[in-house]
Length: 78
Image 1 (tube, helix red, strand yellow):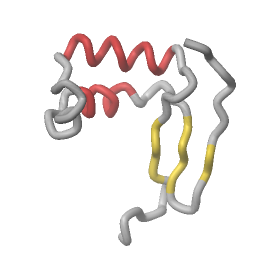
Image 2 (cartoon, rainbow, N blue to C red; image 1 turned 135 degrees about the vertical axis):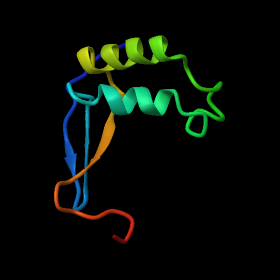
Image 3 (cartoon, rainbow, N blue to C red; image 1 turned 180 degrees about the vertical axis):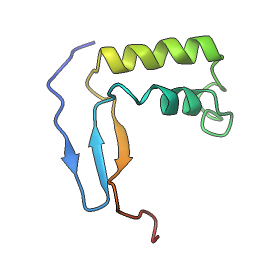
């Protein structure tokens, strides 16, 4: 896959950025959640999810991003 410099998009309430150290737990949680993965082939097993999360954090690639709530900002009308 082609890598490219990944910029950061900052909105009023969220930041869109490449996966970074500290994101692993959330990435694993999403990958193992049956509701999140319902139409994506089902949940991944814990080991595969952890390996994928580590790879995404250490080798950020084009098209891989996380959306993070900005500190002190509400989302979804909160």
